[in-house]
Length: 285
Image (cartoon, rainbow, N blue to C red; front, side, top):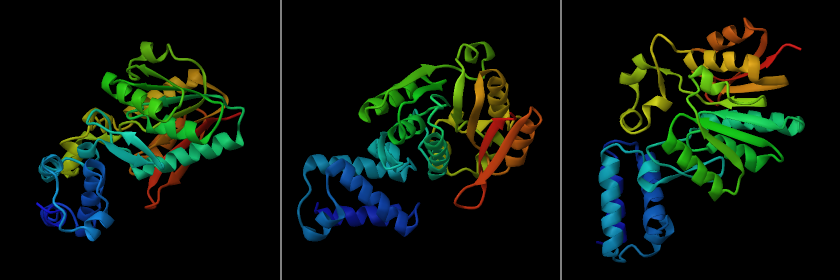
């Protein structure tokens, strides 16, 4: 089969589940990642025959995409904060909203270089601590996750980007285990925050492939992780420190309320879509 014929096959078949613009982007990502073929290669040499190996690899990828597997899992990587991260089904695919969370942390650290010790709760692929470390200097970063597989992926990503981060497998909801952690100047987290009752409305490629424990919380406990972060921070946030959290758009006021009731100041920030997405908390002086 020629390059152009297979490229057009991707575009046509992916239109069944993606808008045309997105199917074109996904096709380009797959061809570049799995066969080393850019869009310009397709244009310049449309009649060039694809090798048997590349043909099998690309055809298998198309089958996975048509089964709603996210392209990041198909090609095994994703671009986030201008960095490439290894991505498997053991970790959540980083979202653009989380880049905004990281930007807030970096901005704070650049203005407060004395804040040295940082804890990242629920690290997943390691995208948050790695992006922070690549854009700031001289910080001691500890990252935790309940998943041993996620810790392995995060460790590999940290090595890939030559960052020094201490990864630990800890169930943060287990009080005794989290209390073995130290005192920190900054706590950052993108915890699970989607109530279970929202699962039917979640896109297939998310709920069928991404780790559910990194996405969902019990319907009747939408603030489960924020309450745990609050309880932990009372004892483990250093004087003058800050907490940066990604939040569900519908629960910003509730997150702010529980922290304010415990003598924290809270600033809610909206994402690029105008929705409450980040909560920044600090103890009253």
